[in-house]
Image (tube, rainbow over all chains, first blue to last red; front, side):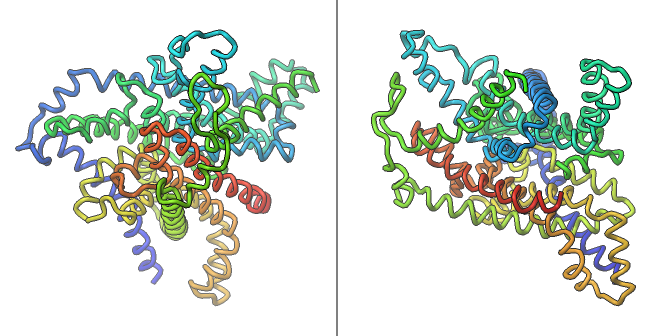
Length: 287
Length: 256
């Protein structure tokens, strides 16, 4: 009887958790090799060749990785600084609720808000005009849909940093960093040594997998770069959807090539991060 | 306290509250042309139109609520039960690793690769299809979330109930559900938010026919109707604020 329930549970797990992912991956692989698809007529490697030789995937991957790396680094840096410098203040009743508020803002709203503030006819452009710093809207610097992805990075930071502040505050409390710091101080460590040799290593060791996980999430971000990104290069998810949903049916397979490569990369990342029973699951649940 | 600390904290609070205030003000504005810093009209005209058919916002709000509640309920309950099987399985680590693949992948890419199957199943462009698609990304989260609950202590409790003559239904309703109440609520909130915030997957599977609030925001941005866009944003962010408040006040504080 016990085994029967267990087998039913396992069956549902496979049906919901494994089959859709496997089906999506196999279908994408078949499409990318021309085996399935409306205008495809049999196995071919030409879509892979054209995708890999065009260089668009690598450009997009490099662009996405750079944006994700910069956003995560700045977010984690700022969050660590805030969590260590303002531990007591951020745990006070009102502030402890206020710092949760950014979690209520989805990516699409954050991107819309950034656009409203930093576009050429946006709030800061209007303010600059009133202050006499601009004579025309076009003089306002390109901060959205720009080549350096400033708008995207700003939006990512505002979305990711609050999460890390909460995470670090939690780790600070659970790992008793305050006690460790006092101990280090009583043993003669300077405030600088306490920060660099005690607090930061303890907090980063406990959270590095989540930092990597956020890097991967940002790598596949969609709505923010869709609103705030430029035409070329595009971030990975935007590129995949653009290719798959385009009107030229002969090019759709190339979109699936990018989707397959992206899936392999994130799957390998998942294997590297989670194959051994890491503490990430606990960290995700705890935070 | 050093003098700069209150200044930094005040700046932080202003930065956090600014988007909420700005979006509410933008949603109440109209005819706000460059270079004006303040709008020509400011009032409740836009908000009054939520109930009209012109914007379709009330319909979007209702469909978003229905989809998110369905996704959250089904994901939380199935995640709770199935994570038990996974956590007690001899190959727990392999099964958990399999859970991470859909969890870590961009939902929009996952949806695009799955769209063929949704089309074949007749779920394309239907709310049911969006619910099923969102469930596929919320379920792995719920599964991972509950994995820490099924530990040795829980197993011992289950064994104790069995030793004392309790059956499986009693074990769940009299023991497991009461002790997992806090976690079930948090998981419900989180999966609700995953669904509520979802845009990419919904746009792929809903093909513009299932107009949730995130889809509406995007449509209004495309139309350059920023006032209705801001209005949709307000409807999108205030329910999560209330949920966060309730979550923090009644759930976190009780289980910490």
